[in-house]
Amino acid sequence: MKTQVAIIGAGPSGLLLGQLLAKQGIDNVIVERVSGEYVLGRIRAGVLEQGMVDLLREAGVSERMDREGEVHTGVELAFNDKRVRIALDELTGGDTVMVYGQTEVTRDLMDARKEAGLTTVYEASNVQLHDVKTDAPYVTFEKDGEQVRLECDYIAGCDGFHGVSRQTIPDEVKTEHERVYPFGWLGLLSDTKPCHEELIYCKTDRGFALASMRSPTRSRYYIQVPLTDKVEDWSDDAFWTELKRRLPADVAATMETGPSIEKSIAPLRSFVCEPMQYGNMFLVGDAAHIVPPTGAKGLNLAASDVATLYKIMTRVYKDGDKDCVMQYSEICLRRVWHGERFSWWMTNMMHDFGEVEVNGTDSQTFSRFMESELNFYTDNEQGRRVIAMQYVGLPYEDIK
Ligand code: RFL
Ligand code: PHB
Image (cartoon, rainbow, N blue to C red):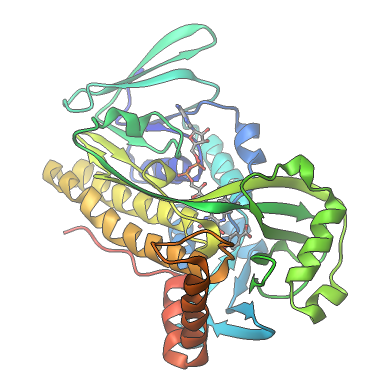
């Protein structure tokens, strides 16, 4: 097999990149480890920044999102019996976010790829990248017991945090930055009416909670849990009882509950791999960086990486400018680090770290610092604007 860009991974990063490249006439093949149904079964992000929404429109896959997605002009932070609304549009000069599930984005991209007749190899095992430092890199994998070789000009490693692409960068070339948090998020999806029309991020003595949604009839809730907890430890009833204790009392009082459709625990981590490219291989999305979900940035950072690689590949194939590929990592990392900092900051401010020492500070002192931080940023308009600007997403950087 031969193509121009080999894409490893059919998550949102790989599928969106493939779609955008195909629109520019750039041939690409996606190689994915699991089945399409399995990819769609992962319940993840729900909030899309303006930049990602625009990119999905550019890719020609926005029709259903524009019809069914919900534009949100604000989010709430609840703490100490206070509720502060961050008026996203007013504070940023009109920017908003779109509530539309990652599952739906993925489904739309899969449908568009199928319709365009583009090749995706699902359930490919033992995927390996070769000769990425040369002008003739290739990918090998096994499919239905046969060994396949895919030759290409470039490889996009869109294979998530546990993928193989990052491992092809030698240890002496890459630096990995990591912070693992001492808690996780237990998420529950249910066909119930959302408890409030906007998202509410809640900080309480019992730990963090988030009220989110997918549609007017489908809710997504999260609660902070110890890393030692297992999903089996949490019946639906136990989840709803604990969630109600953490939500503002009036919201909890009228909240609709029901059976869970999905329940899972995600550990929280900040992670960045530098650089994000090696020879003719580029890391995109979770393959290069992870954020804790508190800022709703993971998928959105993946989208900005895709935007950068797409612009670079377009320049390479349309103008024959191969040198521009050198800009990829630098451009991506500038925005990635802003997203990392925001997600880390929001996580620190909104969670309960218990008795754990944080950043060399004892837990009680750290908790006071964070309380002050939260009050300071929410009590005045400039502070709320700083939160709003980052929540709707910083602008995408152009290539030079
Ligand atoms: P993905 O989605 O992990 O897809 C990678 C794909 O690569 C495949 N793969 C391989 N394929 C071939 N060979 C191999 N060796 C392979 N190894 C892996 C995998 O099977 C998979 O299909 O990465 P991608 O595309 O970069 O997308 C990133 C996003 O999924 C992620 O950043 C977000 O879900 C993060 N996230 C959120 N982001 C937001 O922007 N807003 C949110 O509101 C938000 N909420 C969340 C989130 C993530 C969460 N979890 C569970 C981690 C909420 C949660 C709970
Ligand atoms: C979600 O709806 O899954 C969601 C929303 C906002 C976040 C994280 C997750 O910050």
